[in-house]
Structures are given as C-alpha cells and as structure tokens.
Length: 369
Ligand SMILES: Cc1cc2nc3c(=O)[nH]c(=O)nc-3n(C[C@H](O)[C@H](O)[C@H](O)COP(=O)(O)OP(=O)(O)OC[C@H]3O[C@@H](n4cnc5c(N)ncnc54)[C@H](O)[C@@H]3O)c2cc1C
Image 1 (tube, protein in one colour):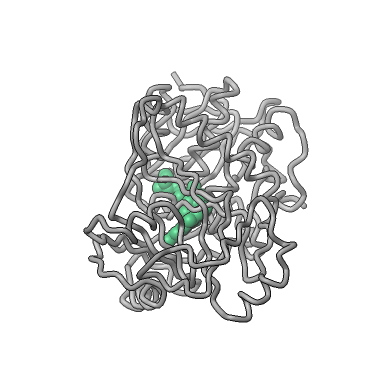
Image 2: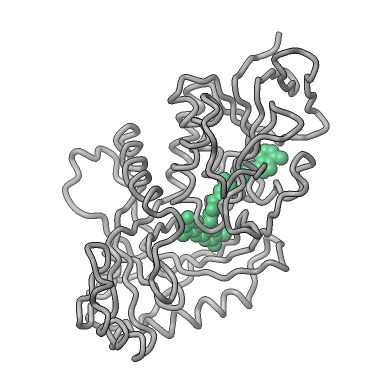
C-alpha cells in the first residue's frame, strides 16, 4: 500500500525546511526527502539578515514585508522548540572613505530609527573604524545549522522526513485522473515541490529558469581569547569589505536565560564565483577573505574551518516560485540566492497561500510571469 501525502518536498535546506514547517502548520500531510551528503548551502551560510545594504545604504528589495515577517517567524519557532538560533544584532558599517563620511554628515536626514550615526568610533581598538560608521539596527543572524537540525527533528517526530537521494527516473506523473498526482516508489502525493537549491539548475521540469549559481567560501576563525575587542565584536555584525559574525552558542530553556552568550569563534567571508562551481575550498578565496579581514581587523586568530556552498542565485536576482505550466502537480520554491534567511519565511507563507487558496504570487517571483 502506498503512503499518501498532500506535498512531497525534495530538499531540506532552508527553503524545504521552512516550506514544510509552514505547510504542516496548515494541517497538510507533508513528506520531505533529503540526502544530507549532498551540498547544502544553508548549513554553510553566515545567516545574516540586513535590511539596508549597498554603498548608498538603501533598503533591500521588499524589506518592508520581509523583516517584520522574519522578526516574528524565527523567535516564534525559538519559543516553540525552546532553542535559541536567531540573534537580533545590529550591523556596524565603518565608513570606507572620508567622502562617504562627509556625505553622511551632510545628509543626516537619511538617519532614522533604523540607522544610527554614533559620530565617533564605535569600537575601541584593533578595528579600523577611525572614520566612524553607521549602525543598522534591524539586522540579525541565524545559526542555520542549529535551525536545520531543529526542523529536521520536528519533521521526524511528525513522520514527515525521509533520508533519500531523489531520482527523477523513479518519479511517475499521473496525468489521467481528475486529481493529478505523483508517485515515487511507495509514496503517492498530490503535489511535488522542488527545493533542491542550486541542484535545480538541471531539473528537467524547470530547465529554462534563469538560475545562475554562485559558489561562496567562508572561514571559521577563533580569536581564542576573551578580550575587550572580542567582547565588542560579539555585539555586532561587522561589515567593511567583508563581514564578521559571532558564531553564538545556542541556549535551551530560553525563559531562564540569564546572560548573553559569548563566543571567541566567528565566521567571515565571502566571495562570489560563477565559474568554479566545485565543492573544493580554494586558496585563492581564503586569501581574498583574509586580505579583506586584515584590512579592517588587527587581531590574531586561528582558522578552524574553511567551508564552501553553492548559492541558488538567479539572473533576475529574484526567487523562482510557482507551478509548472503543463503539470499542475509539480512546483518549485527556489532561487533565494544570497538572502535565503530573510526571504524564505515570507515567501513560504505566500506560496502556501497560493497553493491552498489560489491567491496570486508576487509578479516578480512567479515563474509563469
Ligand atoms: C558562503 C555563503 C554564505 C552565505 N551567507 C548568507 C547569509 O549571511 N545570509 C543569507 O540569507 N544567505 C546566505 N547564504 C545563502 C543561503 O545559504 C541560501 O540563500 C539558502 O541557504 C538557500 O537554501 P535552499 O534550501 O534553497 O538550498 P540548499 O541549502 O542548498 O538546500 C538544498 C537541499 O536539497 C538537497 N538535495 C539536492 N538534491 C537532492 C536530491 N536529488 N535528493 C535529495 N535531496 C537533494 C540538498 O541535500 C540540500 O539539503 C550564503 C551562502 C553561502 C554559500
């Protein structure tokens, strides 16, 4: 006898995990298939979300919708699972040039409740912020590894997870009946949704989508000492040429949290490579990241890890969401590029509304636009 589901999701990165969670919350029967040995760029990600970016510090695309949503979403799950993985943290952007500093001094009207201009060096020593800088308040970072493990455990409890390498050869589409569906080995599902990240560039059902995967590398560094600068760096995400994010420990029993967590381990990066999509860490990227880091920080560290991920980026720089034009039982939820942490919770909600009520998706993300 076949096991019946409403949705069969392929991939348990951030996209598959958050989509599966959102569907389960709606009372749907869900099964996620994932092969953990494959590359999963969600596990590698620094997990930063930052609503104001670029040289001119402009609001990122849809940040007015995305940020209120994610600021509810992750803390709600922390409460539900009694586990800490989301750290609201301001992004500190030291000025790169005198011109930039003067520009900001002349345009203080750009400063609002989200951007603070401390008008003096914010960090005390070892960090090159002699021109001062800006603090962006509504930033944060997600410990994606802890988040993914937490969701995996939840899916297992709900009988909604199976470790398996999905193979297109084993998929049968049932197009005959009124209720079209898919059959995969002993599974029958009304709908299959692909969340395979960069691997969906070669998905035979979605060959023409404008994927442009980008390799990124990241270093885990350890300052190995509890000193003033490291304490200060624990309170911010430093962003000057590269970013530096504290790799905070998770605490359970959140209600009894007594003190802020502190770490000497940080993650720093990254680079973008559209040509070399291998999973090998490279000396070139390591040097590039270290050069940028040393330009802003004068502190000894040890490299503990060097990791690689392939971002499911797109030529349009927008996600790719929707249902196949000829097969209504096949969809894709993908293309979150370098901003999965901020985009996925909102678009998972929007996609689930579309699947359950037919409400239209944003024109910019719809694959049939
Ligand atoms: C170095 C680096 C730093 C980053 N930093 C940030 C950041 O600070 N903030 C941010 O928002 N984003 C960041 N990103 C981007 C972020 O990682 C992505 O936006 C996001 O993780 C994409 O998630 P995904 O679920 O679509 O893809 P993935 O995480 O790649 O997940 C795809 C899943 O599909 C599974 N899969 C694939 N094929 C199969 C198959 N045949 N059968 C079974 N399972 C399969 C894989 O095992 C994997 O689990 C970073 C990325 C990199 C590389």
